Amino acid sequence: MVQLKNDFPKSKVGRRPNSIPTKAIQLHYSLVGRLLKFKESCGFDELYRKDVGEILSGKPSASLSLPLFQSRIQAGFPSPCGDFKERSLDLNEPLVSHKAATFFMRVTGDSMTGVGIFPGDLLIVDRSLNPISGKVVIAVLNGEMTLKRLEKSKEGFLLCAENNRYEDIKVREEDDFSIWGVVTNVIHCLL
Image (tube, rainbow, N blue to C red; front, top):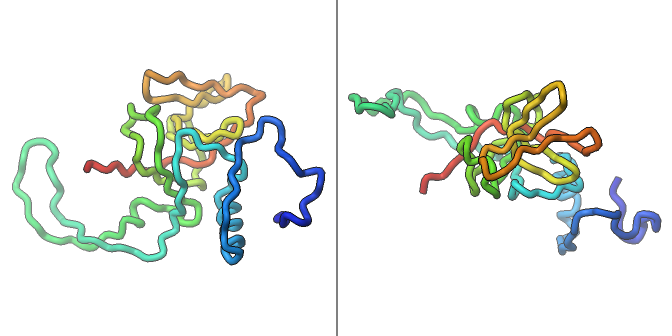
């Protein structure tokens, strides 16, 4: 439920203990509804993003088809190749399976470099996938968002860093814990 400042209940005024810091922003009145709908569609109300930077919607507004060549490129010994165009490829096809549930997230932090995820990389995150052990996920632990590999066991959940400079995080029974989404692809710029 959305309430404007003038009709906000007095019992809700002030910050809750241990709440995250907030920042007031100016926004044109015509954009408020769109912002609130986006916030609701993302499913986060009070997330503090530690290992994840910006969140971008994965809903493509237009396709961009580029040439896909028939020849494969050899990563070992060089081999003859042709430049025969097979078809065009829209990157949304192989990278975005569930458009309404897919988001892009920019990485901050270096706890996942062991699996090839570096600061500045762009993650493709699917919120409709069932998180299974061994997958890289966006987890929310006690109101903070983090990028880790999920491990499930009889004892519970473990959020594993892929950089030995960081310790794994054991999720305790009293923790507020959820999986926000499963990372399906990483876009890593080489320039």
